[in-house]
Length: 118
Image (cartoon, rainbow, N blue to C red; front, side, top):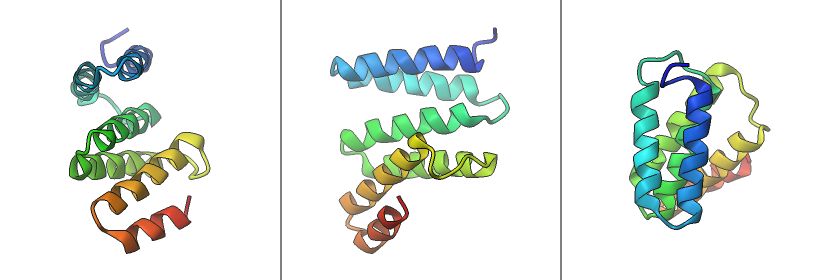
């Protein structure tokens, strides 16, 4: 398997989640950045939405709302482009987090619109 293979990325996502649970957000962020580098030259797939959504949630939880907004929107765009249904659990969670991020940025009307769609 190549370094950017989906199986490898899934393993890295599990490692990032473990670090988040331990409260080591720096290590988790480094893993997400590593995934970004590994996936940069691969064909886009649903896992690219998945890692971006999880990274967006991490950024939001750390108060980095502007970065989170961009990351979550990219995740949703990836899934939309691949035809992943909005009712999918991870897609709905990412959309909910996007609404929370918009609220944190004081963009309340946008937040309400996003959250209505979840």
